[in-house]
Image (cartoon, rainbow, N blue to C red; front, top):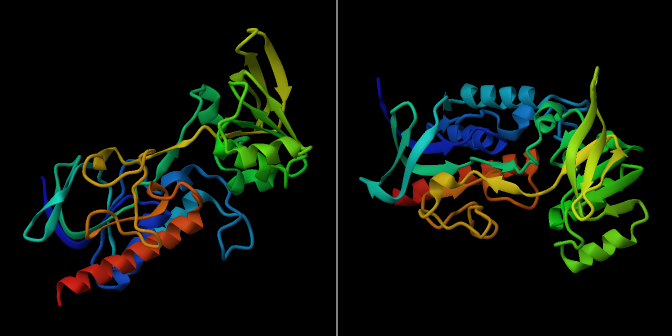
Amino acid sequence: MAEIFITDLLIIGAGPAGYTAAIYGARANLSPIILTGLQPGGQLIITNEIENFPGFSNAIQGPWLMEQMAQQAKNVGAKIINDTVTECHLQTKTKGLFTVLTDMGNTYKARSIIIATGAQARWLGLKAEEELQGYGISACATCDGFFYRGKQVAVIGGGNTAVEEALYLTHHASHVYLIHRRNSLRAEKIQQDRLMKNPKISIIWDSVVEDILAESDPPSVTGLTLKNVITGQSSTLPIDGIFIAIGHKPNTQLFQNQIDLDEEGYIKTTSGTTKTSIPGVFAAGDVQDKTYRQAITAAGSGCMAALEAERFLSSLEK
């Protein structure tokens, strides 16, 4: 049976940003409700090992970390509901409340909202990508580059993200191949210059990935099959890891034409804050951060969003 929920703080999304916002919101007595969406835990739910989240001397599992955050949020009073938002009415209020509708037919009315729906990496569309994520395929060099010390890796892409990933990986890998479908890069000129001057980086131009070569026991990447788009010839490149860097897509489809987004679809926030173009609506994590995209920065912005929501609600009572 459909229900109506009323809360001071509704959090849409249940990754590091959403769970942290819930923890701080609950401690501020805002009785937060989290709507988890289709993938509770966000991108960390498909991250096998995390070695850079503060407080842990050994590698931890992404799903485990998300379980701990969820449990902590529950322990301090947050309500976590496995439901998916289908409509979000941000530009109109009824009696000071935003209205959100969900897949289960429920209605949520909230005095403030934190959007923490995250972003998803764009993939090549190969079957092996899904099977080998965490076993040789990644979309985050700063997250996983450490695991490829002394190994050969490939970066797929030609924009700023791809060049930055390639340069970062030279701190760990023995050699980095940048594979791009065109004969020129889209990245900023200064970044291109750094790339060209780095002896640990080779560029393979005019080429696309046809297939990913791997072993099954244990699962691991062994190489790539590349196709030259000019000659049509195929070749094999032996490598130990692949980093897909063809961009990210923020999960903001629900909020289009309601809230200010940038040209790439990320939610715009006032500099140094999580405030959006709508008073009482805040955005945290990768849905508004296209620069860092780390679990720890997402968690930090979730904390900021909850504190700003509490201040916003307090200002209404004066």
